[in-house]
Amino acid sequence: MSNEIEAIVQSLRSLERAEDVNQAYGAVDRMNRESKTADLLDLAAAIEKACDVGGAAKFPFEAVADHVEEVLALSPSDEHVDALFTLLGRPRVRSVQRPRSTEMRTRAFASRLGHGQSKDALAKTITRLGNDEEHVELLACWMHECVLRGTPLDRDEAVVKFHARLAETKHPLGEMPLVLLEAESEAPTYMPMYGSNAISKAVARLESGAASTRTIPPPGDHEAPRATRVEDAAVEKRMREAIVPWSSGSNSKAEARVFELDPEMDTASPGRWLLRALSLDCLEGAKALHAERVSSEVVWGALFAAAANGGAQSAGLGGGYGRRAAWASLGALIDAPADATPHQLDARAPSASFLVFGAPSGWWNDVAWDIGALAVRSGGASVAVLAATDAD
Image (cartoon, rainbow, N blue to C red; front, side, top):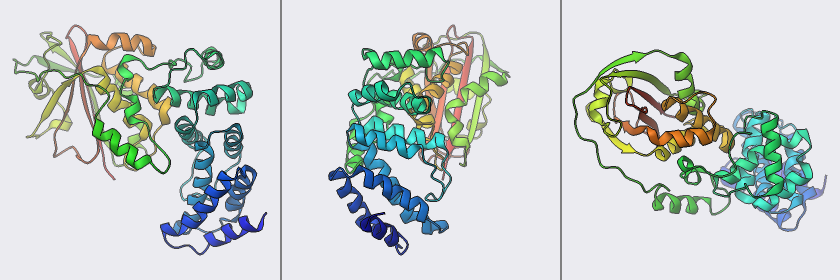
């Protein structure tokens, strides 16, 4: 261990405030600028070994180790990518305040690689490491992080071959396409950003609005049909897939329901009147019910954001698996077969009609984590509803 690394590690024992790690951050940034990648790996190992404290005292160790991982992921070069793969292969259990599974670390690394590295870097890494089984999961997640940020990969030979191998081996991400589908157009809006300008970029993105610009006139009032609850545990479970992260370590509530309608209704005219005709826990006693007709990409985007980014106190599934969960939930909402592919679901989605809704009181937390989605299925004979809310 070099004297500088030893000094950084020793300094972490006496830090009390979050801003006190800035000096250590600066040392990490300088090592990175000077291409001292081996030193960064040694520093990460030294921090993990030296972290023999508990509780909040772990914070400085965790923060600086996280910063090492982030600068490696966000700095373009084969050397940095390989170093990050090396770190993933090392257990990290001491320098964290809460346990991080290999799965969680893999998806976090993939997210940062998708933000910081080019598609050419991905293709080169797949060519170099794609046949190594221990690297397949990170590469698969990284690949979809790129797609979800708006970079099509369907014409890159190395990526296409790797993707085909995933499909052949029944990898969970093997059926996810290498381009964004129509309903996925808002995906880039929900992808996390990293680095020193992340906050300003996020603000600018929020100010620019959602990617989808399609609007539908507000619904009018109609005579409500008779709604009969259909209990189907398998369908309700699929509807909830996108909000599973909200139920892990958070204070969430969720409701998934399917109703048959008599008579069948025109799929082009759902509104608040239809919601009031349904027996829903989430709307019991609601006075200020709001609803808006939307296209499938708005619903898919809300489901994806919940799945990929997680809830108030829980981590998400990451881009690739969040994408998969969003399609599972949307497929159940529109009454598609459980084995339908994203391409098939994307083609089927326009045959349904959608509402997003909520009520800022009662059942709802009305903070930042609320989903209310209704789908009138093709033909108008049934309707599905998914509602969820979470709070810290």
